[in-house]
Length: 369
Image 1 (cartoon, helix red, strand yellow):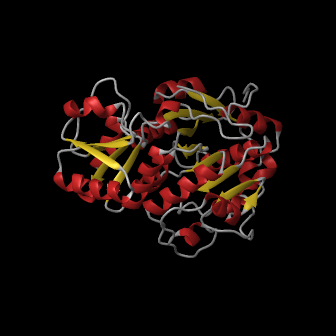
Image 2 (cartoon, one colour):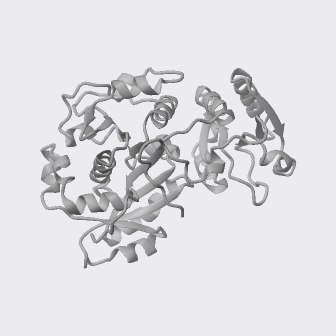
Image 3 (cartoon, helix red, strand yellow):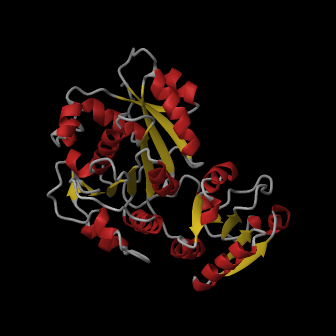
């Protein structure tokens, strides 16, 4: 598994540069035998001003696969050409249901587009594939089980990256989590929250988004409100548009994903990398192994929360769930109370926490827990 290096100034190249460079052709390749899917994608590509090559199966796709600017695979395709790059997007229809997401994992697709709802997003994605611009990294944080400490880890990582001079955005991906802003004591800080973006459509200007977001701890954040008001949520197209603008406007985007299925689908598939936080407990290891079945096929690593000498050590937990261990998240006295009182940023200044965050972000140092 490759390591991400946090850029010091301008965003550096992604972990796999070939995925972000245009091919030798500006053509989009669609592999599907479904006429209804072909017609939908043809309309989208035409609206985006692109060119589409459509083939019915993997055998006929092979000559075009590596030179296409983007490869789209329909939900009817099960076999891919051997030793080729992963398809950029798995496209399907609402009727495909949950099987679409499981198929995306099986074929290694980088993104999923459920049509026609994701039509606008797919058009923008294809436009970027023909002339990709440098963008920031998107790192997802999720808990292997409930109460694992993923939100705490995400805040500490955002605080550490900002301390090193990066432009950072922390995104609250869990509408049922009570509002990340409460842990930052920033509920009164002016700026946009998710409900303010619910009606956003089309391309979002990165600078305008950055200027409109609240700031705490040296980083920008986008939170669900920390109040009792009822919200209907935001659709996947809005999430994709916001995160696209975030990627173009920040050097590092940290997604506090949550563990709900809808949150995983909306946010996890936008990540370049995912860190799973799990306590050093047997039940947590079992829950984490189950969670992995819902995650997209991107680089994923484990952070174990616990003290050295715990009943189950980090290496054993990592081996049992099948993930490389990427650090030990320290148990900090008073962290739970600090979260309730909105003082979590204070705990992030402690030496052990800074060391942990720097290791996860590959900023040097040794993680001794």
